[in-house]
Image (cartoon, rainbow, N blue to C red):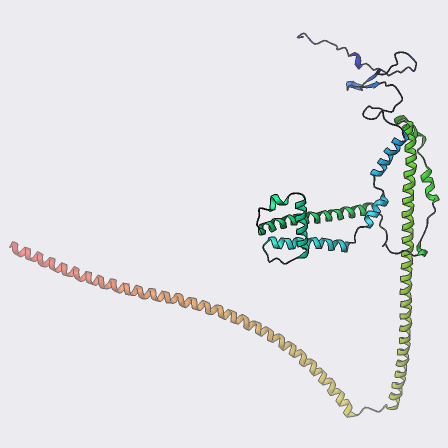
Length: 435
């Protein structure tokens, strides 16, 4: 065990490449339960893999659970039918989306739920409740539902009336909110499906017989009759038994025919809607053109009438000017000059008035600024006077203290002089006593 490592390691027998060879001959060895093994090594020593096969008796097809499957036509028909029914056809989705309400109706439903939630929330927040028949009816239905589920007696019987109503309102609030969220989620899902799957058609309305359009059915015949090519059929037959492949081809043709019919119907509907929209658009534009033509005719009549009236007026004015062409008098000339001078003076007065108004505004602005400065100066003067008053009071207080100190110094000086005199007299008395 603890010896040195060998220089070379012999590979195991199962690592050798072994090809699977099956000899089709009748022999006693060909019995059920024989095992066939094929191994293959990966290049560059990356590993190996193997295939193991077990022979069984009979021709039954094996399913994924290693049990013989039923390949009868009835079984295959049931399996394929169930598989097809699992997928929702697009025309069924169209029926579902056709029952969807318009955005205005959906907004009303959302507003209804929001109003109910607000009413219940107001009562829960101890605001003045108003009797609402819908809320009371929902509470009655909630109580019946809780009683039917056996949840009312255990949770609400022991509460007084106020607490019971509050608990019921909270439960009702949660259920209404969940219902509103479900409706909103459902509408979002349907809108998303409609946006992704449904074609953007025109508005839905009654279709007139002239707008109906039918496409030739031959355009889909080739798509229906086209079968898988030889390579695909060979791959199917190698993977699945023949009954399943045959049934798959039958169902493939049926499904392609169903898809073609739906597509054909949809294309006819689109063509019909386009034809209807084109007819409506042409009718509307024709009405607009007729209206514009009538407006043009009316305008032309008015223009002709105005032109004729203007020409007549010009002729009459020319005749009057030629008939009453009198020289202008001096009085008239002076009047015109005075009129022009008055107009000029009026303009000057208006300009001066505007200038005066501007100057008045400037003066008022300066006066306001002066008042502001005056108020500031008065405040400063008052502050200075207050400070000066304090200084004067302090000076008076200091002068009084100085006088007191001077009096005290004078008294001290007098006391010193008296003491000095007494000392001198005492010294003199001592000297006299010595003699």
